Length: 510
Ligand code: GLU
Image 1 (cartoon, helix red, strand yellow):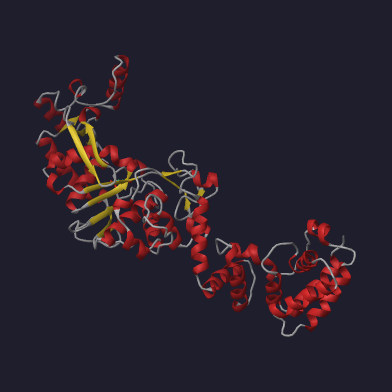
Image 2 (spheres, helix red, strand yellow; image 1 turned 90 degrees about the vertical axis):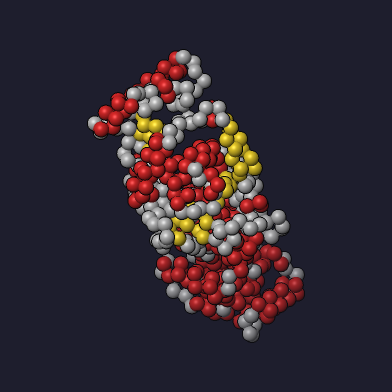
């Protein structure tokens, strides 16, 4: 499909860290832009000063960077339509708000918080179906539609605080053509006179969003489903400004749901249920509360992007592993579903595992080496590389190599009592002594030779294979865990293996 010049924006509010839902919005915008040779713009919507959180903007930028989502225009890179931070565009919005008032599409309202509260109490007492500021109630409130021109002028000149409200037309049908949901029709009688411009001189989200999308020549608005109810107002604003023919296309993405599918995935769910919901770790600047991040948990950014892409989108084939470039090639809005997409933490780990096993052993070894260094373990890179090759099928994250391979770096000091109870027999010390002899003679000391020689010995003496191999493992590892026994032996080397079996003979007491 040819969309003309595609320009999309990711327009987060810096009210806290982005969670996976927010980052998915960024990713889908980016994929759509790149697929259609378009521009991806980052705009910061910081007009709600009460909800501003220091550090949130930096967090957004770092998250995009980690995901390899490149900003073509906007915050950090600049562009033709600067500034891209809404708090720096105040005067622009004031001008457009006034224009709406002049054209009678909006009006000044002087009601105090107390007036608004009284209105709500009155409407409730009258058992009115809604308690909204709308075409029915506005006539009894203090605004430029109910007051005389003279009064309005006086109030404005005396500096009385005011807001500018949209004059919602009465009983009109508004149609939103959504690229994902199809036609959504709403009657204006269900909508209220939203505040467009606040008494602090700042626009609300609705006004700023429309003005900026228009001035920045945005072609497609791709955002979360929670914004669908606001879209009829947005369509009416485009009409009121006379910009209807240049109105962007809308695409509202399904919600991201909790793992059990019951309700929207919330920022608190992650740490409550034991998985991250934020791309990067976030420390609340006020409470110092720490929220875990995918990056710090050990997810690779490529895996994380793949996980995000499948939250709502699917390629229509069996393929599950997609690089960023493959996603760009395959992406289309038509393949985004309408129903909410469940976040599955187990599947997320599976994705990371798929990316981990595809990495070279050299790369894994370097990553694992730095974890070992932090733990004060200094080991040879080639040794670490062999360990990674042997254990990578068993881990989802690089950090899990520690659990899978600690015995390669230190001899056991304790032995699993359950294994001892089950496997250690009266003849075990003699068998182990024989095995020491056999191993001593195994040259070269590799998997093939040691396996053949030990197994031949067990068969020849009609011993129990499982029992002997398990006690042997017990002396080397301290438990019944770990990868293939003869691979462990080859990596540990002859001297270490024999030293450990001898130590087992001394230290394991049934
Ligand atoms: N600032 C809004 C948000 O935080 C943007 C919504 C939109 O994309 O229109 O999600």
